Length: 105
Image 1: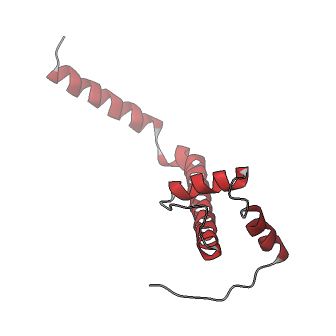
Image 2: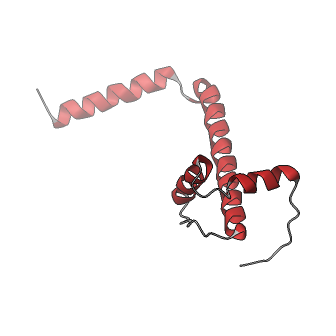
């Protein structure tokens, strides 16, 4: 689905776009790299709408990545409650017995 929308930019957002107007600057080079990572191919004559769309995609990816990091951190915090050390030792012992049975001596 494609949708056209009107977007009012703040001064800060205008400055961000102005920074990206220098298509040879360090910010643009990094922007191109991040865009390529997300599957976008930017050219120096990319429209302002394309730049805004890619900026939005990069921001969305940052949110997704941060949510995953927080989830992994929470999982790591809860890991001792999930995994029982005795159970882990027993699983390793059974695995070693199975390997010894298949590959004796």
